[in-house]
Image (cartoon, rainbow, N blue to C red; front, side, top):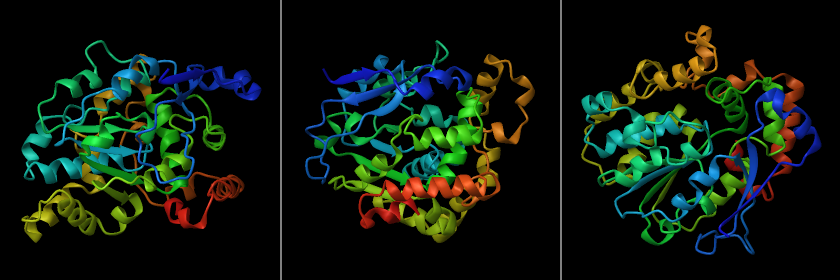
Length: 335
């Protein structure tokens, strides 16, 4: 059996999950991981938190065809995924801003496991879209290595991984969950769920460590905070990785301006306003349509968590992060 599905048996979770709208959460173990090139002695992937919908897509993703000219972007949620998608797509498509404006990012970059996370409109099927896309395909996922297609490790297309400071991830993921997943708990509830490895795609530490230990020669690793500090330098790294080194400095500067968060928030092709609006209407929250915290691209700050997480929770969260770093060599992943 490729996957094992288990209910969450924690009694506190069971007694409170309905209050937070987490009743659909389950634990998924991948049992087919022998081909994953992880450089960890005796490595076995940990189970992750997903939803009861995941069996719909699990085997199809695991067995899907991988093409040599694919481009895969994989991140833990809210780590700069959308930002990186737009950057990579434009670099690989001759900085075609007009086409990027005309075609939504979801169409250009299908999120393959989305149908295994939540209910979708009948017309929406990102995994099918990925199967049917002409090459070169651009594909997004938040899955850890063991859950990705087996063929990825032999075909070895371009793979981009992005990480972000865990406190920033937690706060951004909370707001994302409220707007898109109808999460009904508080920020503190959500942060504690993350610390208990009971938010989608957790455990967080293992996700970052496993990608850092992949022996995969065609992977680029990026950091959200580095992108914020020096976006032009990140753009140059991406251009180098994709062998697109003939852009002029003026073109690179134009791309950096396009990728500014103010521009991204106003860009209808990437900010998923229609999808957010659909979710809010489906859950009788139309009054939140103009709420800035309900936008897919919200703030994009490096230290925005300082304004939202109380000091006591920050201290507890920092302790959790530190306890789960098995070796100091991984500390840089969580800065």
